Image (cartoon, rainbow, N blue to C red; front, side, top):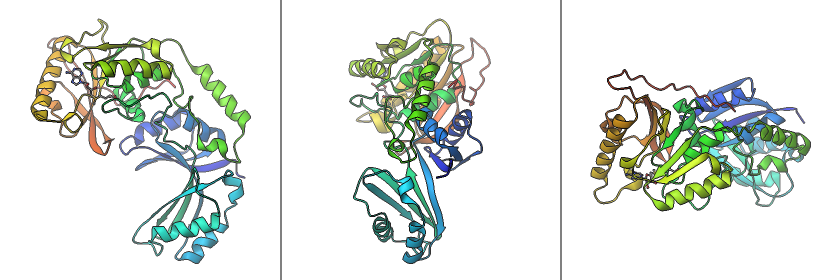
Length: 381
Ligand SMILES: C[S@@+](CC[C@H](N)C(=O)[O-])C[C@H]1O[C@@H](n2cnc3c(N)ncnc32)[C@H](O)[C@@H]1O
């Protein structure tokens, strides 16, 4: 079996540049951002390391075969040429097929049936992806298992929790210097604060979960254990103040529980507070948040309430946050402009199927000049 594999690291569209930066920081060369992720060629330890350490990726898939097929016969020939015993773990598989109308093999159900015939496995957890695009077949194995934003720390979901990978992307895109305070005034279940603490403390996001590749024949537990020890050795205790506030008592309780499970309970101060009562540390830092937006916290009077909330939030920041950086994630039609702050969109992506933007900027001092936040991530990990 080869010592290197072609892989595709999947990300939510819009997060590819941040993901490319992460993958390159793990020493992976060459790597190329394309729509929906990063293509790269990996050693096995690099494949494990991306799963363990990427904060942005959704999953990693490994390309097992690529061939031309214009009918069931050539599909079966191509599939039989793969040494499946070198790739697949014992146990069952789930075949996931996508096809396009320009391929002779456009019927995904029929393709799935043929793939299952060749593999001859019962239904099980290892996902085998088969993509047919203009008669070109790509067969990939999912190396991650549960999506990588499942870090293993989340308890019962709060009102509208954001994906951990998106929260990490927001923190990284904000340009947080990892030295000055970070405040989330609409923290919900605390996703942003927890991801920020894990970034500051260089904690590997995948430390408390398992991965599909651990069952693969190529897996070497010695190498993996070394990687885990290395990741544990990188963790630092130092963390700047991180404050998570929400008006909802249940949300605040869930922050403390989630933070404790994530191992950053001591690094986050959770407080019940409406945004009008927001008190910021004297040392300026970063306000990074996912404030309410209509689709998620709607209801009667939703739009008016939302306009009032953004008017209020803007006024609070103009009054109390001179010198602070701001990065907010909000749905496309959210009245962010009502905040009257020098924010500009730096990332467009998706959250729960909705188009969302990250708005970022620096709040000038009294009469000071505002400049946009840096869009370059500064993850020390
Ligand atoms: C979109 S959710 C944040 C979700 C969070 N990012 C997470 O991952 O769980 C918005 C939060 O704002 C809180 N909220 C709404 N109005 C508020 C106000 N005036 N002051 C403080 N928090 C408020 C809600 O209770 C809710 O938890």
